[in-house]
Every structure is written in C-alpha cells, then in structure tokens.
Image 1 (cartoon, rainbow, N blue to C red):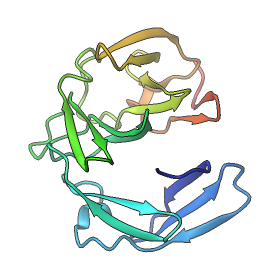
Image 2 (cartoon, rainbow, N blue to C red):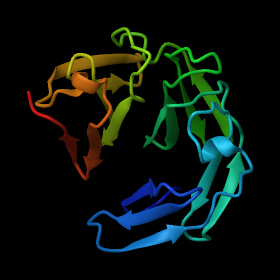
Image 3 (cartoon, rainbow, N blue to C red):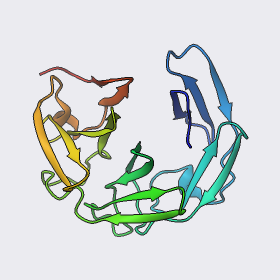
Length: 192
C-alpha cells in the first residue's frame, strides 16, 4: 500500500493547498483540499492526534485512527511497511522523545517510548527531527552535533555514523534540507 511511484508532496503555503511533484520535478498536480475541520492541518502550531491519508488513485483523503500522543512539529516517514511519527512537542510545548508506528492492516498505532532519548538536549526553538529513509533504514541528522545517525529498529538505538558537511547547528536545524533521493541521502545547507 502507499504511493508506488516516488513523489514529493509539499504544502504550498495557501490554506490546505498541497501539490505533488514527480521525483524530477517535471510534472505536478494540485491535490484535493484536506477535508478535516481540524485547523492544525493548515496552521502547524497546534498539536493533534488526528491523521489523514491521501490515496493517489482515488484522489481522496480519509481519516485514520488517531495517534496515542498529541503532537506538533513532528516528522514522519514510511519504513518497512509502517508509517512512523517521531518527536515533536506536546500540548504543554514539551519536547517528545517518543515515536509511534502505524500499521495499516490493523489501523492501529504502537507507541515507541524513548525513540529519541539519546538525542542531545533540545532547545525550545529546535526544528522538527530531520529524518530520511534509504534502503529500509531510517537516518536522522542530529542537528546540534551536525551528526548523521541510523536507527536500529530492533534495539531502539541510534548508531552514530559521522559528521555531515553542513552546519545544521547554526539555526537548530531550520533551513536544512535532509531527504532521501532513491538510494542516497541528500543534505543541503551552509557548509562548515
């Protein structure tokens, strides 16, 4: 399940306007408006447990079961057949170290305690976690240390891989692009 082709989906800034580009940015289409009345989908400064998914074949949004923890400023990815949500802030603006994984076959979420427990102390103005998936491995840019890490899904531990060539710590991760492109990681930012 999920999108079979590689697409880049982005919010274009206007209320509920989403666009989908092919991986080469040669073709795009505007997606239908998100039908939810939950305004946090349009102004991402409000925590929520609500989740909606888009079906590219039917061009429809559908509501799925909510997460265990309400969160804002989190990051998400598709990994090994499940959708993962990491970090973010709760309704008291406290940073969350837990993650959650969604199983589409059971329409249920599993809470993953302490998924980000080994990350450096997070400042209040920290960006959402910078994550990317390549070859069924989850990578994160630990912005305060400019360090690349890979997640071991079996032990819930992040392994340090080395320093990246950008200064992600300069703005606490904001303004850094960290994405997967096929079988590679892409990082864009000011060099050291």
